[in-house]
Length: 172
Image 1 (cartoon, helix red, strand yellow):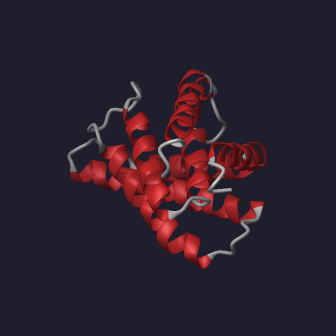
Image 2 (cartoon, one colour):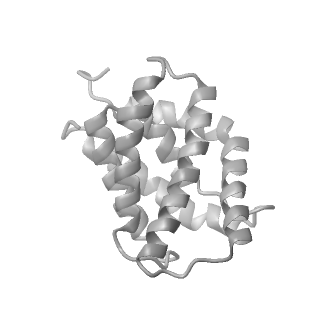
Image 3 (cartoon, one colour):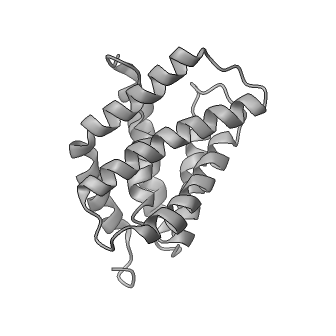
């Protein structure tokens, strides 16, 4: 990642984190909660090159670890998002078209955010974190996937525009 791009990416994810914590977490969604931050991050990473995606995953995970509502070991989100961003950028991105359609971005965002939640729960359980019942976990993960899919017409165009705005002239 270009050093010129780093402050812009940091500003985007910090702003999104504040919106998630101050606004979206206050809504009571019908089935389960919705993480705009995760869905936005996954749609962002699928557009990035491998090196930039890993740096973005580290930044986004570090910011998510700062959340006061998460009762998990510090660094767990950083680990999950860094590893998942590497897998998405190196394996999934290589298998997709050069021009990502909104439907592809929707599918990847929904599947990857659900995978991130599952990995977070697995690693958290390994580290001794309390995990809820199986029905609660399935409901939470499927509810997040449902809301990620339903609200994708709102956040995917925003992801595309903000991603392009953070690119340097050389990368465009």
